[in-house]
Length: 187
Image (cartoon, rainbow, N blue to C red; front, side, top):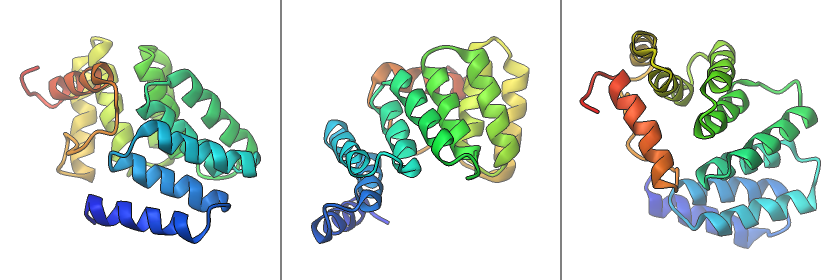
């Protein structure tokens, strides 16, 4: 799906109903992923949570957007809220989101722990593998990083993502520099 079409569909959904927490959160995620203003999309998910403070997916989406906005502390807090509200839901992506937030805080040991749990729960989720590989590089564990990239290649041939939603250039470079080295590219 093209960026333009995804944005148009998200905006149409918002026009159809502006008081549905699910539509607000999902539209915010789509719009943010495709490059819309991160502050505006965070405003949408905040509105969803104001309408339904017990909306676990809304807290999870807020956590994702906070990572993209370079707010890892809030990301962790919001994903933890999501986990408390819906502890039986699949944990993989939520643990990966927390791991990515710890990665950007440069708390690599905590990131590694969350990412390994995420992969155990959802072994087909490439973002967790990518971040784990970058994490290992920044911990000086290059052989383990390369092993993670080998595992990633069994899931997808695309080691380096086409688009990164991280708005902070320093976050992007931290992630990409680690992933490049793990993939065996010149860093």
